[in-house]
Image: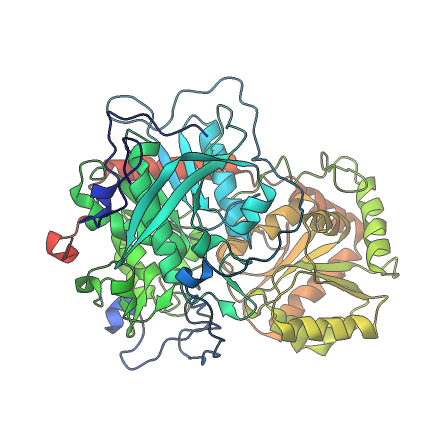
Length: 605
């Protein structure tokens, strides 16, 4: 089958760049995609993984956790013929649109003076589908970049959650994508409502076998075993589709976390020989280096990478493929989400086994704190909370506190309320909270919002059942309840093992809810100890208890506490400052020579 507007799919092509070379004579697409020095560990040490090894959440690089066997699942090919569950009716969402009356001059331009387009690749994106802060961070960054005059396009997979909740329309015809020995079919979609000027363009990449599943990255059994193949398809589909979506090449492809790091690898090897791609710069944001994408050696051939790349300087890591490591090596510049975390990643303790790679990046690694949308997270304008308030008029804070107590069954009217809103996992410091019985002996109240590991859910639920008037647990997270929680609580708990950036502590301060947090990553960069919050250093129950005790003592000093609340609410955590720093990074990377690898690296291309 072939036509002027449809790429031929009845033959194998030598490369994807051949497959997608558009026929300019045809119609346009319709309006309606180890050495110790290298990895930072001793040569005889073993890397650690947590949960399914494909996600490779590394919590402590010096220890190994045995993976739990999972039940056999259907392959991508068999998934296509499996009976699909009935879709439930859900409220349709539309892409957020920021009214921009007049676009400013483009702050990022090509040598000829025309705007320099930026393309983001993300495994999740708010409000369409997300599991954590990544989707919100990418959406906010893209929003503020577009409003500044940069042409921005964001690609994300067309998950079933997106299809159920978003009105979409097709963007062009199906096209072929080769992934290792297979030739797959892809199609692009976009929201039915076109983006207004000054807003990013959103494009979804469709593959029902890969993305039409209940979860984004996995299910109750763990991560999907074919995640390497899924996100290899996603990256290659985008690179293949770019010439027909953007006839003029983008200046920068900005990937986020290991799921999209393959884009940098493909771009700098197989696709580098094609004139369309040779000038594109690759930027990779590391939002959470604990997730690295570890896979067996056989994955190299399965996702179409030449085996010559499987070496300790590029993709090999302790006898396995490490996709995040490959993305770091092949990107022109790497960004992590706070200056303190950029330093931590260069240390053996904080580098998750990749500290040698982060050190080798030298000045190609920079740290930029994420921002929050201060139009959404503003107690003076928040339409979700029962009563609005501001630093000048704090009466509404007390009304929200009463509303939170009524909603959770708490009844200690004078005792301070500690709140935790996070995934209930070890990274978030649950072992510190549960590790000292004295913590719950405070004359205080506690609300926990979120779900996660069963052991933490059970432990907290048991505590709430024993003291329902003081401890409340809500496992079904909703954004509406999170607004109420931050507006009504007095203190926000973030005793994290590590926290690359964190958004909750910024939102909490905006609402006058004082964070009690560990001095790591973005928490150290956004909380001023004794001024807008309380910090502690050692990951021990003792040090955590000292910080919590300081907070409780300060709470009973009414005048000093209210002054701390006002100071926290006055802090600027908007994306404007962060977006300007990203702009400087882009300008810098466009002025640097691109990362090049000798063509023999791409054997077989």
